[in-house]
Image (cartoon, rainbow, N blue to C red; front, side, top):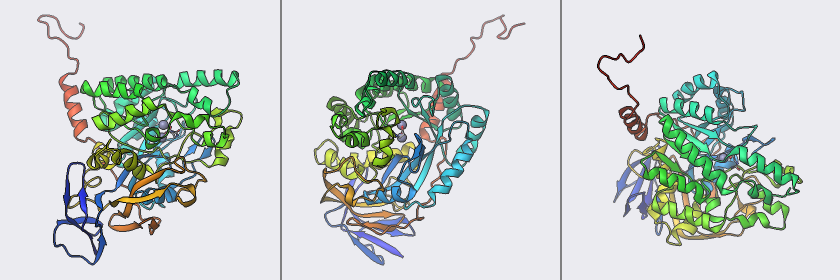
Length: 483
Ligand SMILES: NC(=O)NCCC(=O)O
Ligand SMILES: [Zn+2]
Ligand SMILES: [Zn+2]
């Protein structure tokens, strides 16, 4: 069984050219002219691009006394609907729970996925068991480890734990990841706001000013540098955090920053809406920021100081959000976006001239494939790559509305936004899952994608750290060790 994508323009992170694509056995078998196959997909007027990779999702995650509502079934269906063909979810041990135990839980859930997926592992506590099991996790092909510097009393790790874990990740050839917010300060500010009668969703934003993010990002960067590990900063929402990442990259540090489509396109005014539900549905950490911070994020994508656009898809229903009526700290943190990331970024990024189509591919797919050592299996249009592709119609339009979304929740934070640029076809390992908005995806089609440790950036960093490691000064007549 073979499929030809005919008459399209291939757009990758570095090239734009006209050619047809032949798909066989789930992979790209040939790229060129005059190819033949059993079935044909017409890509006239469309771009043929690597399917999106969303490296930041929380599907059916136990969090803040409940579970995020989109699971691997509805979450990955949403992904495909919007042109995303792979997600990377966070396996999240509860404090005290073993990493392998958590992994088993995630394996039990992910069998329902409609598209391919991988995991990051969260380090939510520290001890000998965690240290030991990290090796087994890497052997399973999970090479990125997330640390929460916020959520005090729940998921947060302290600096000594951060440093110990970062060193272990570095030794294992993995990547350290951080949710960078100063959890101690957030806890203090939250308690004070509540005591002063600030109980509504807007107080969530007051409790997490940009400084808490800037400080934590800078701290994580410095700790990672001392530990000798590459660092990936998730959900960068503001200039304070972006500035720390920009500076570090200019200093040659191996740091990447990930803004979310929500922070790029929605702002803090959402929290001042008179409707409690409207504001609470948009509560996430870090919160939405003002227009200046948004501009900084767009500039970072253009300049290359920020590398990846993700969603942090963690969707709660209105009913779940209402757990926090009377106390904003109990509103489950998280928003959706899996289905809308690609169309929203194309509309607000490419259609405005802020991003080229090639830059769009880079920040939605290829960059993260390289960072996570998935490239060129994923994130590429090359012979031998998985046929995870999106045939993108730049003229197709729709208005986003919860009524027609794949997500299982009852609202959409992008409700009413008009987008121009949508998938004509989304193809997951050679199988057409979406045709002009019509779903034909299959539960259980998705496969786990294992990743190798010690990618090129790890090897370069290790080499440099070895070369510049502290060494004893040789002094004649004085032994290095005491007598
Ligand atoms: N971001 C958020 O508010 N919820 C999901 C968990 C996290 O990434 O912090
Ligand atoms: Zn986070
Ligand atoms: Zn997250």
